[in-house]
Image: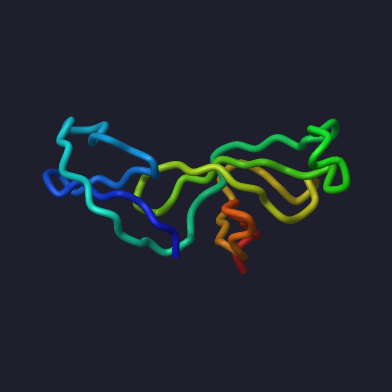
Length: 105
């Protein structure tokens, strides 16, 4: 499950943090959880990381469009050869506040 904000005026979901609904501009946002499933929106493989992540490189950073419509950033498991925009993915784990996604079965 992924924590998101849901507008109590129009029902749209938004990634955290948020201060108003991007759709209707209401400030009435409630924290809720949605299933950690979505679609690979875009991705990029990092080959030259910051010094703090050198041991993890190369790794792939992705933007995932959740089933409810909002987009979040995380890492995605799997080789770049198997990735393409539009693939179904789901949360594998949350590590150090980073969403780690894997390809859906």
